[in-house]
Image 1 (tube, one colour):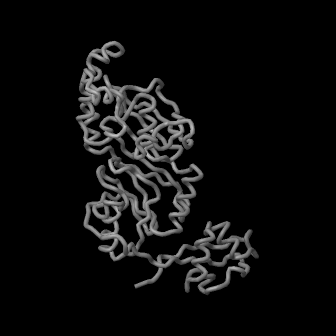
Image 2 (cartoon, rainbow, N blue to C red):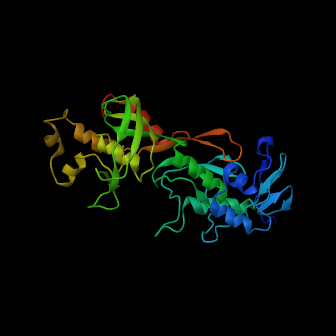
Length: 335
């Protein structure tokens, strides 16, 4: 079995004749210092025209530079059979449509049954050795597009695109009420709730956080919105939509403020009669019962392929539970 992944190749153009190989590797191929150190110690890590060389040599126009990464395994992860919804795959990337209810990585108390366990099993069944490297996160109850890099070079390049803000991540959510504007931005710093550290809240001294939204459809008591993340804070969409009075339908952690009254034993219908139409509070409670998770779906992700250099758009259709909720909302004159 080959010890290496397929090589990543670069042909030296005329205008780079005479440059140092090190410069090409770092400035043109984007090899990080950490990875460069690793490649220098690898038997076939850095090759020039099929020969192992020092990175201090000068290259000539037409030279073929190849870097090879040693194959890796996720030996600390138990392979488990799992149905995977593959949107795209090549020798560098695996793109999945993650179902709701599945944790991406093993965590304390959840060492099995995660998406990573299923992916490692799939790779082993195919005879491939890769280390599981998701390049971004999705909450357990959020469905949709998830990109996994098959080696550290690919992971590094996509991570750099994310830091630069060139990866376009779009979400679709079904929310209570309707935002005051058809489109807009929610610019609210986010940090841990000092009272409940597992939650996040908008607070002045929080980390800068920006979400853009557009209302796609409106219903008597709810809306469907498309959201674009400009930053990647934990629970960002859920926190921001709650902050503008439009929490996600079904969200048990970031619930509509009406729940505070319910938990306090207050008659919500009576309390809300003064400021809302009659029955709105009970409508909110009823709406949340139609779906057993937050109604949030990662609908698309756009990035530049690190090797091919072309822009790629990955999309995942709306899952059945959100389609059913949407149909119910569109067909109801009143909840």
